[in-house]
Length: 269
Image (cartoon, rainbow, N blue to C red):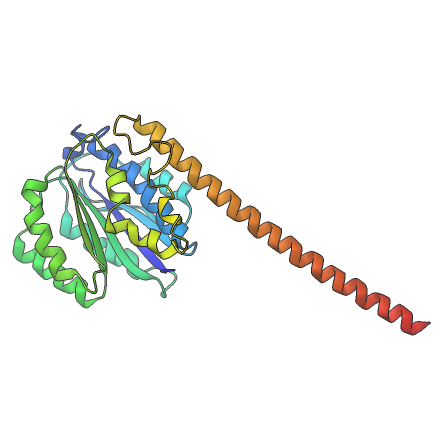
């Protein structure tokens, strides 16, 4: 299992008010953040995820690296849509947050949503990409909403930063599908599935393969509720199995102690 710390950068610029993604660009990101968090922590319980925004007066870390989704939600509740996105600055701040991770054994990854036009120059982007590659930091970009403007720049950026195919660019045009479904099926998260998919069945976990969740006409809130229900049930079952195993080990230990006590009593006779 990959041990990893991931900073997720949300685009909270004015462009996120656009309703070309269900229900709008901003909400589509929030739904996807939850899927990313659950994928990362499901693949390895020691993985951590942090959240930050990249627009407004300054880049803001709204949740430090954590394995507690409640902390992520609390940070997201304080975010607002305003201003222009800052692609380079946000990645630099994300790198700083990853550098300060508690577990230095974790690999470092940035996942950034890009749903508004990139204003930085191609030269500056190339310089940042080279620095990221040198520092062995992986970057996944979710390109949506302004793909006609950004795709060429981002393709070049990823081609530079990519090392051993650990960085990815996922371009998702508007459509009747949900953003998180497309991201979940992309290389950004499929590696998390493949890491745990020893039997060939785990790949269907939470991907919309059951209950007709591939139907684009399904209510997005219902689809998310089904997904979360599946994940919670798997987590509950895993905990129950672990508790059962721990109980069996404790019973075996007590049995050994009792047998040892009987032997001592026999010797005293």
